[in-house]
Structure formats: structure tokens, C-alpha cells
Image (cartoon, rainbow, N blue to C red; front, side, top):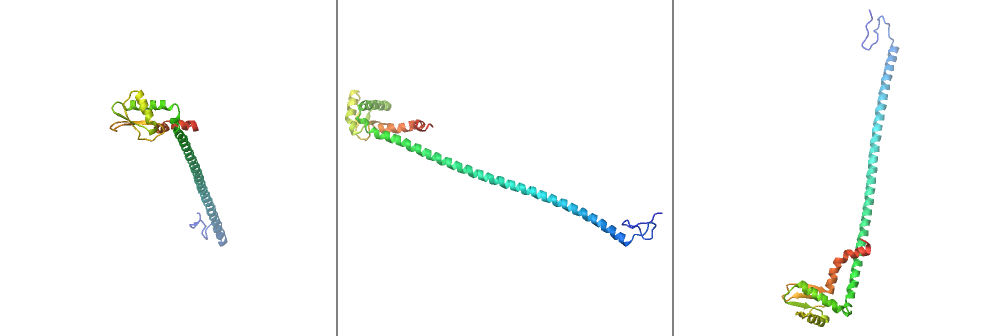
Length: 213
């Protein structure tokens, strides 16, 4: 019949399996303790390695995100500066266009003062008068002219057999205005007023000629 053992698996003293000495018992405990310690150390190292790996991955991800944000910020700043530079250039170009455009018409306006001295002016005046009366329609008409054109206007009206009141109440480089006697409607046909209308009509065409827009 086998001898009974204790709960730790060691044979009981006096049994048929022999007696375990104190030294043997101590060595066995130390051996088992070292094995448990090695297992714990190995698990600890594995856990530590896993933690370090995870931490490194998170740090790399954070660093990459930071770099991406930094690159995005730099790119955004560059785009902003480029946009501001382009906007400033466009503004300067538009100002230059407007200045050139105004200069062209200012020069043309200055030359209008010489038109009255040309041979073609009486024919021009006659055409402007006919156009104005036609646009105004019938009824009593008043022709408004510069004093320098008063005699010319009366002569043209007589040649065309048109009865109108002529008043010298405007100052202009040439041309005339025509209104109804009651003042309800006026047709502006001086050289200056025609030039102003031409500015708006030909502005885009002038820009295209000057800048190819």
C-alpha cells in the first residue's frame, strides 16, 4: 500500500517512499521559486515591450499628425500670401486700366473744344439738331445752345424750315439740347453728353483694345 503524501506532494516522514531531508526540501522550493520568478520576469518583459511598442506607435502617430498639421498650416499660409499678392496685382491692374481709360477720354474731351472750328462742324450741328427734334417728337420745342452756336442754329432751322425757340443758356464745346416748351422732356445732345454716353458704351471695347481683355 503506497504511503500517504502531504498536500505539497512531498512524501510524509516515515513512509515507505523514504524521508525528504530539509536540504532537499529547501532546494526544491528554491527551484520552484526561480521558475516562477523567471515566468513573472518573462511576462513582465513581454508586457513592457508591448507597452513600449504601443507607446512608440502612438508617439509616431502624434508626430505624423503634428507634421501634417504643420505642413497644412504652412501650405495654407503660402496660399494666403499668393492670394493676397494676386489680389493686389489685380487691384493695381484695374487701377491702371481705369486711369488709362479716363486719360483717353479726358484727352478726347479736350479735343472737343477744337471741333467748333472745323469745316465739318456746321454739318455735324445740323445732324445733331435733326436727331434731337426727331427723338423729342412733335409739339412746341426749345433749342438750348451755347452762345457761340446761336447764329448757326437759327440758320440751320431756317434752312430746314423748322420753327423753334432758340435760347443761349448752356455752355458746351458743341452740339445742343432740345426740350419741350413745358420742360417735361429734354434730349441731351451736346458733344460732352455724347462723349459721356460713349464712355460707357465703348469702355469694354477700349479695355479689350488696350489690354486684350
